[in-house]
Image (cartoon, rainbow, N blue to C red):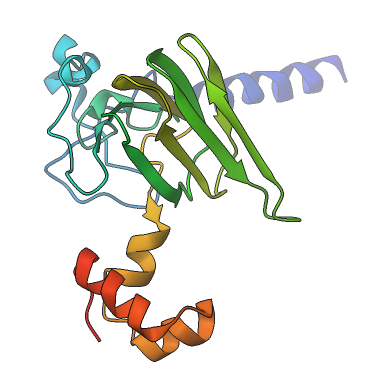
Amino acid sequence: MYFQALFIFSLLIISSSQAAVLDFCVGDLSLPDGPGGYACKKPSKVTSDDFVFSGLATPVKLIPLIKAAVTPAFAPQFPGLNGLGISMARLDLAIGGVIPMHTHPGASEVLYVVQGEICAGFISSSDNKVFFKTLKQGDIMVFPQGLLHFQINSGKTSAVAIVSFSSPTPGLQITDFALFANDLPTELVAATTFLDAALIKKLKGVLGGTN
């Protein structure tokens, strides 16, 4: 009985060592992204640079319509994140800037205010309750996965925030663009949102939608 138990234990040790988790899986960006992320780069081709990203030091150009910009550090920009379940981004908001109502289907988000003042909030899916707060420098706020949320520069100076996500590819769907930046017919948008057709056409004109 003793030797039988010892044999089974030895098999378990061998099996667990064979199924050991890789230390990392730097994304091979030359291959397509899939539901599980990118395929792993060959270990012999992995370098220290794969684990370093300097892109958040300098913001990208502001989008005039929203007076804001998002600089991502997701797996496509930072392949060392691939498979690790994390990512980051930088938010820059000019005075009056806004990150419109949106969701991240694949991740929860934590926002840290580096500079300025940001009014941020989210809406629960169970009862549409709104949770929002004016955040000052040094404040942190969390946004649960998949919930509609927003950020607005509510101060008198430009604002900067760093956000982290619980996925290397959190995904993004902006509500306004989902409704007004495509070819979904105006009559269907009107029927499902109760908005006036003239207003819908105006918004489509601003955001590049048709029909």
